[in-house]
Length: 103
Length: 103
DNA sequence: CTGAATCCGCTATGATACTG
DNA sequence: CAGTATCATAGCGGATTCAG
Image (cartoon, rainbow over all chains, first blue to last red; front, side):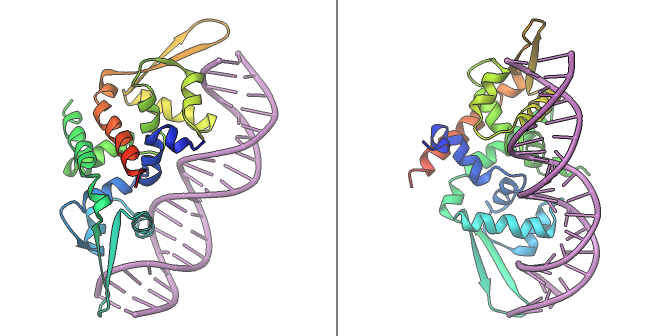
């Protein structure tokens, strides 16, 4: 009996339940963006965690990584269709923060 | 300039952006419950992290802790009004997991 | 020059045993 | 029953190094 299926929330958390994943996904809602630009949008994230996290998202099929074979190196990240299906949740999290921070 | 306000999502994540917080909050949606019962609903959480996490939620005003001065000890946790305001988000996360796990 | 991997020190986490 | 203490491990952050 798989616990992730007993409560689907466990399944969701296994995919996006970390400190940085929702933030990265949120900043990709507006479209694909270059690696360095994306990283600058995430305040406080370390280089290492950015790379590690975005790669996990890629592995889980939420983010697509596109490499341009040019000099200097260029890498872009964008949401997959599956990643986009989280849009409502991500925007709700953002809206909740906006409202709650007023109180 | 506070980064948590530049993007409200940062603020939200600072409150519930950990592995266990959404799970604990979700299992409190149906009402107050005794400590041990709540912990059993969270598969995989260690005793230490359960106590630590639920106390942080209490400190942030999302969860209310009620102590009954009896023997054996009895402690109940329930959502505060502020905690309940996350209901929509928590149920969306659960629903998303249910849908996504089908694919 | 950009993107990412490696190394090291530190913090957070988990398992177990124990206290009130 | 609820929570704490202790210790081993895993994960994170920062600086540096490497690759293209």
